[in-house]
Length: 429
Image 1: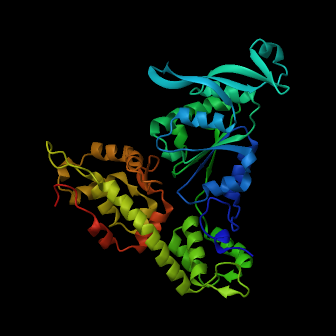
Image 2: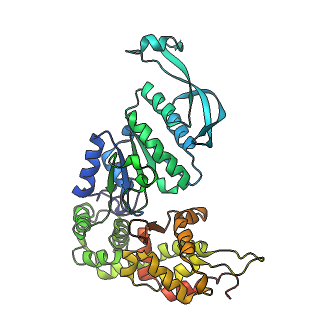
Image 3: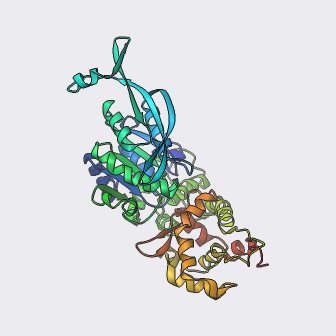
């Protein structure tokens, strides 16, 4: 007997209809066998966390959930804390790296003393015994990748370190971690980085040394055949058949496995299936339509709120009316075909379209667009839009949607109603 939400849907736990894909799972497994960091990337709700849950147990890794306020010090402190490394005393220190002041944490830690080839050298350090075990007291700077690497080697650390939600981090922190990953690699301390973006070599843009030193695993695209395998897996578990509607669902979800899973789950609920059915239940178009309406309602409330926050900008009384580029970008976005949105909005055509409807068309310069695009993710982060909806792909010079539920929302919502409900920026009313 299985519950419907154990078979279908989006969950932090591994669901029963997880399917393995050669283009994703095989690359990930090969990456685990090599002494390289693994970068797993793709839009939200496309299976990044599920991939790690499928192939790793909790004994295989230490996980750090990144947040917009996390620093490298916070991340490294979390790693040490999860390994039960005992910090006896600590104090903040400021070091200068590349001419820039960095806040660190100088600490005395107590770790097990394993002896071995280094025993003679180790014996000269401060050691103590407790309950028949030997411990060593050492000093290190918790903010330095090299110090942390040396510490992890001393405690015989063999696991992977997962950085979940890497995209939440401030860009400066992402850059520092990209540099630190090269140091960790030298000590065979290996990370798995999970992030929401769609372009290759994102971390290599911050540190060119990472080129050819990491395994990149894109979790997209999801092929129609992959999505059909999901309902084939679910058929014997719930005794429900999607044969007559699976193509309709796929066409509705824009290759988003998260949306697909949620519509399958809600379709089962609409058909009265909350757990394994005694008799075969055929899911109907009416069931799917009811599910689509339910998910549209769920996604609409979030996306409308996020868009309102994204375009909000206060005018300064001492200046002329601002350019309000985010507001005009959203207006153009809602005028585009779903095919163009899916492919990404190119920078130059976007600028020209904004100028056509702008209140100060001659002032919409390339530099203004550049500033808007460069800060696209950071501005969403600062407004607590999580996960972010938009990202700028440097490789194609276009804005991409990185929240997979947004495609479903913009296809099914009443666009005129959504845009009409936006409050006009100050000075435009």
